[in-house]
Length: 318
Ligand code: HEC
Ligand code: HEC
Image 1 (tube, rainbow, N blue to C red):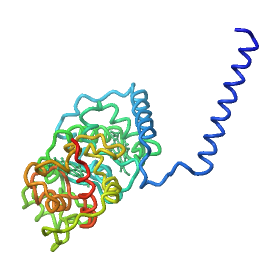
Image 2 (image 1 turned 180 degrees about the vertical axis):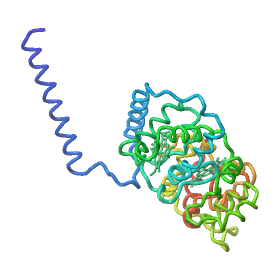
Image 3 (image 1 turned 90 degrees about the vertical axis):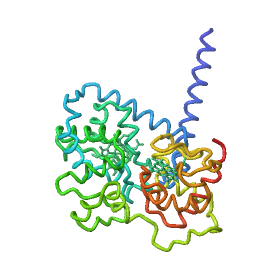
């Protein structure tokens, strides 16, 4: 190549770079990227952010060494106490939905069961200690000692294999143990009552605050809501943190069954026939349909359930 051609090539590249820069600046300046938490990231941005987070955590946690006693029951119980004080509000627990403050956060605080299964303890430790920028995940470095963070990690790993019933049992065995409160913020009446109730009934006490108000009209012929509104509401109620859902960004979690094709499935939760009425009832109160269901009631209104059900019935291809 002659020097003239090399020079032209370099000038061309420089102009392209400049145009790209100006374009990016105009994109930002005119506020084209919507930062509303009710709008999900577009899929490429979501994937890039998630990937960057994973790579960073892997790189940064290289030197962390886990203590050998993470499966000791004492650690797990101590961790459960910290978890319920500091993590439950955002991440929920087996059979317990997060608090209402977590609804509508973007990125949505994920259900931790998949991470607890697949991420090594060292990485979970690093995340809990240092937090994650621009995500709402706080750093606990200055509020929990390293040893307490390892307790939390021990509990989080243990939780990955706990059913709602086992979790409810563990909580009752904790000092001053009460069943967890639902998003209504109402604690169960008192310790004695909570203790008398058998898990998972304790979880049902805990979740009572989230249930549909009595007398909700879920009779036959009750119309479904608006599917487009329902798609937005599904995101706001964090359905994507437990289910794979077509058309919902970030819905790549398998805590519950994938919802692709739910519109044509014969049964809901394998126990009742799939009709709109039962779907609305299931969304308002999963345990009414299936007492052992690991899906917590999310404190939605009847209208929310109708809108979300309408959206679910648009998912017809498995
Ligand atoms: C104020 C809400 C909030 C609280 C409280 C909170 N987290 Fe988070 N956490 C988040 C958000 C938001 C994310 C980022 C979600 C994502 O990965 O996209 C996150 C991410 C995580 C992750 C990474 C999960 C993954 O698969 O990407 C772990 C592990 C985690 N949190 C553990 C904890 C633990 C343990 C506690 C308690 C000590 C806690 N968090 C408290 C909001 C919270
Ligand atoms: C904390 C995790 C979690 C969240 C959040 C959650 N689910 Fe579930 N869901 C589950 C689990 C676990 C099951 C399977 C248990 C069962 O079938 O009872 C399930 C089952 C279902 C089913 C029945 C699926 C089938 O194949 O029969 C539907 C429908 C459903 N969920 C919809 C939703 C919707 C809509 C939302 C948001 C409003 C949501 N879920 C939020 C965990 C969750």
